[in-house]
Length: 88
Image (tube, rainbow, N blue to C red; front, side, top):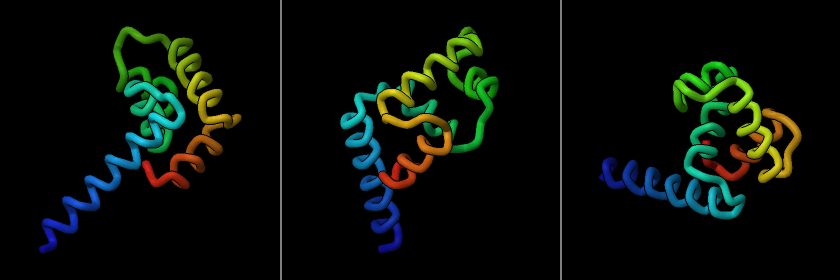
């Protein structure tokens, strides 16, 4: 029974994540970036996690695009929106 509860909880979070990504037109890469922001990663850590060929400027641009799509101004507001929508 506990396995069923965990499985259902995981599936529910996956659905919420997919709906959030769709609602804000976020790519998979942008969703990964948002999760890394939520984990408190620096831009350098985000670059290291995403792709070794992405520059810090590229990470900054990616984050700016996420902010625009979410209609937020900074990491704190992006994190608050992610928490409110239960995706992190």
